[in-house]
Image 1 (cartoon, rainbow, N blue to C red):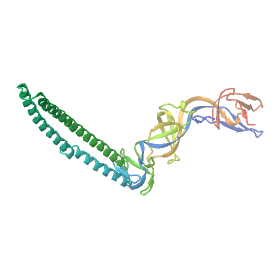
Image 2 (cartoon, helix red, strand yellow):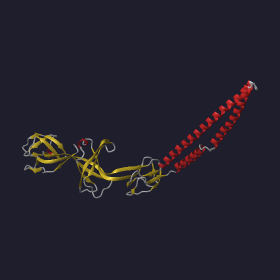
Image 3 (cartoon, one colour):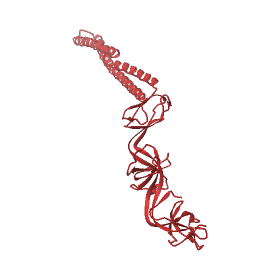
Image 4 (cartoon, rainbow, N blue to C red):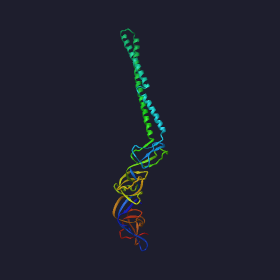
Length: 360
């Protein structure tokens, strides 16, 4: 049985009682509108859930259901004493590393002092080298004595270069260490921010799922926030989704208004199958909004898919074996049928309006 509804806009079927006591009926031509049935809910356009990013006890919950909140507003916090201590330790480590990377830090000052001493030693050894070079050229000293001061001068040059490179390496290492500690501090601060839950957009708190003092797990929902216009979200079966088109009329029966029918139009057809709902999701917008609306209200809908005039129908209960009917004369007749519900069946061929059917 297809999930199709017939909306009879003209005429009714004629049901009679024959003199023999058997129930009879005559085919009737009517204007028929075919529709797909769908259940659904009424939701605001922008609805999202606030969830816990860490495990812990809900230390504070600063909002109530129905309260309007602003983007960035504090909603709740989770006990964070351990993470706060980790942030403090990271701050201490970063301050120490940052101080060590400054030019006047003890490590760099000591290295710089060694460089200055090496520069003075190089200046002294250079003077001796130049003096003994002149003496050697005048043959006043031996070659052995000259080479001694030449080697000392070259050793001082090599030592100064090594100490200067050591100073640069030490400075780079200390800066890198400070940067790593800064990153670690920011990481710990980011982790700490996970313990504080804030609103991602302006809206109304529609539901609170936890209470202050309760244990929450990572990923558990704490609150729902909604904003924007109300839309109708319909769940359409796989067999029917191909029949639904944008702009089609929708007749809505809302649980909060049980005696009134509202109209809407299909505004969006989601392309993917929703595994949670085991259906396709279709959105519709109201032609005229109800006076009061509530997020999550349940509803039922008929989505118009086809409208035809002068369609012949007979009661489904008069059809036997899928395609057979019995006339008043007792003759069994094969007919061709079309759309069908539990109550009515479309007759494509095989009957006319003058035929009288009997129910066996």
